[in-house]
Image 1: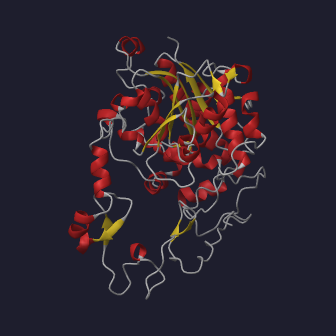
Image 2 (image 1 turned 180 degrees about the horizontal axis):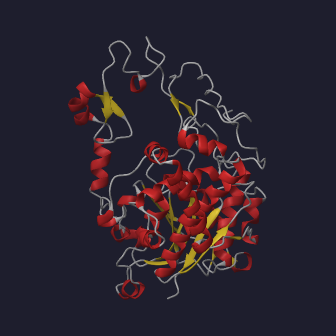
Image 3 (image 1 turned 60 degrees about the vertical axis):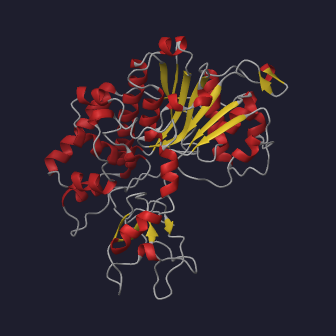
Length: 456
């Protein structure tokens, strides 16, 4: 479903399941899960404004992820189910609005549609010049990413499936988790498993804590608990997930677990009482777009000083391992190393164009606004340039004339530039850092791992 055929035309989305709203959610590549209204094919949230009796819908000011009829806005705000949740979060000592958002330079976020529109406003010469600039910047500044697919003996029981079968997982995800952990061991963030594990506990790292950012269901952390004896666990995730690893972790009496339902942008680690006095590792698997930058800023703020933290007995970062992804979602306001880009002559507008181009690495026809292609559904086939369509003009015509393989290559260059800036930022902070390809692309094309350790 949704793969672009050879002629470049996109197939329409599939029909909705029975009893479901007909509204297609392109980002989730599925239809809305709500039931339609009795007199419509759509639910109340997605009822077209042209429909009889339909009013204008606006984002809820309490939680913009859902909308409400404008005429009911005042009444809804008073009883929005998320109002108490938002108020409870704001009262937490670790909540600090926008603390990791990018500081005084922060502005509003730019949507993918706005990035696309800005690219399409370029003249032909400006567009071609930008592609040339990307190639030259990549050749001059991008750090080569080495391959490092490592599975350690400590993860054998996960790789062989000898884990709790009540925990749902797919083999490709286990391979990714195991290689992230394997690279952490090889980099010196974890002591070797196996012989060092006594009574199910890795005595060398039992005093450590692990904080998983964008934790989702928490299975990466569970690998560390099961295979390396980590005993203090913090899971940071703004969404609520079912089928979580939490249930298995909480059954382990030796594990202390705290799940923080908060956006990384608003997390102040100094406010987490249970983290005080602990040395911790920061990890994250597929931290989408700006989440990687906000995680680095969260763990290594501007005033970061390891000596000071050690003297005052505060928590201390030992290292981090962050698998980056979804570079097309990156934002200038959050990006950690703006000075690196500025030094290369890359402006804010060019950065957002670069992030938009990065999708070509995993979706050769990202130029299509209605793309339904799965992120991890790639092909080694290199197609010829598409035949010009007389109805397609301007920048879109140029994009479609670029062979798919060349577009993908440009997309990877853009990813390299973005991640190189992050790598250099970590090194500037005094960490020993590297950028590796931690799984083959046939397991996941989003296979970049930023790994770093503190030296003092």
